[in-house]
Image (cartoon, rainbow, N blue to C red; front, top):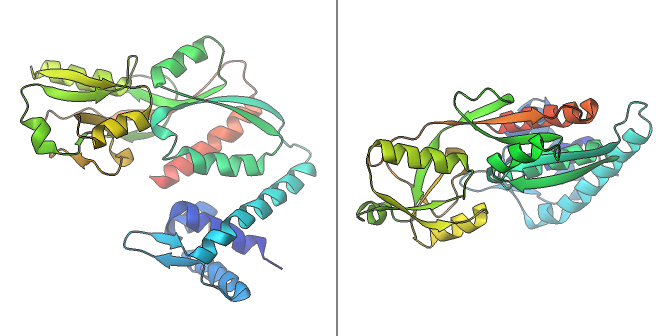
Length: 282
């Protein structure tokens, strides 16, 4: 019989890409997590994890186990919720900034849904400015989005530097006007980039506008121009333009903003999950 504690450690290592980060997330010692993985591999008679040059990755046998492990842990969460008097129920309307969807959100949602199977999530992905407008209109219960320095709205999750990115920095810097790839308005990163270029009197032009980060990334990888993104979310295939070649950009802050009238228990539960896991990834 598979041990759920060992499976939880296995899934955590897969999610975090590191025994150290998985141990921190689970509140265990690194040696304990290593022991869990060792015992699980011994029970199955297969190697489940391997190290590449950057992080711990799944072997083919680990890939085969992962879906089943998640299913078993999900069933455990459902059973626990069934017999917990204070289990959460209802619908939570969550708005998330486009930047966070692929880099941070999957980890948070997977564990939250597993722990609270009776909660239905309605997810909206959009620019931070659009999310704020929707929240003001009563369409969202909780927003996870960017704010500019000096903005007091929301509860701070973490602060992040913005960077200039391009496939070929030397080429874009040689052009008469800096070609920009940007979200449409209202966009926090777009506003910051244009303001700093205007302040330094640098010529620029918008060569591509798209509301999807995947679309902007494709344009940048095609060599169309410069993309501004939080540093830890820099897409692969792009290079950070060295310091001093373009004006420095101000930091942005990611914040949680609950709506008045939203279910406090639901909002609090998801907010704490986000704070713990997203800050842990930092």
